[in-house]
Length: 113
Length: 114
Image 1 (cartoon, chains in turn blue, orange):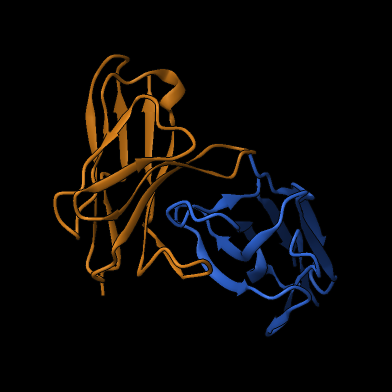
Image 2 (image 1 turned 30 degrees about the vertical axis):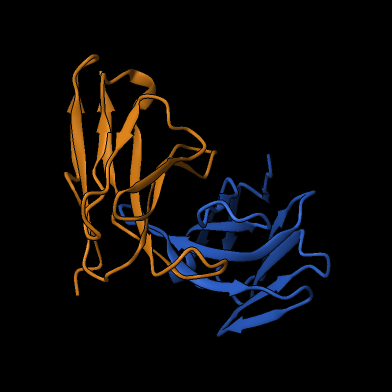
């Protein structure tokens, strides 16, 4: 069974600080996605990374896929209260199993003004 | 532009009762799935479907049934509710099962079994 370990589970920071969330596995994934979820809503896709070593930027968010496609990170620069939410990483297994995604446990981010 | 619509939003059941969570999408997506979300455990796949008439089990299928008679609808049935099924349930759909394809989630259904 492929697992994704996400850390930290909780993060509380002040506005303007930088932070990094990690998503690690001992298994290889064909792609990895990052989602953001707000209370009372479903997860919303932020980015998909496919190639080992790939880096994608979305305004103040930087996503990186590890060279071996086993891990990924999300870095937020100068966090704002609007970044508060649950961040989830999800990996697509290398075997084809009906598009199944393996989700990490999530990181609950709180950015205080 | 409805996307993925789930009903009901909230439901309280007694142990042993049965119910159906409805899910509909208007994007003509072939792939649909049901997840449950529990604190500290991320989302876990219950059942999925790669097209009308085709369903398969995910990671945690016990106690749940699904059917896919049309492309648009993918209901999730709880046969005999148990307190362990207290959770938030999300329906999701995507255009295909190709790796990395965008998955769209519904807003969730909060289920409490007492």
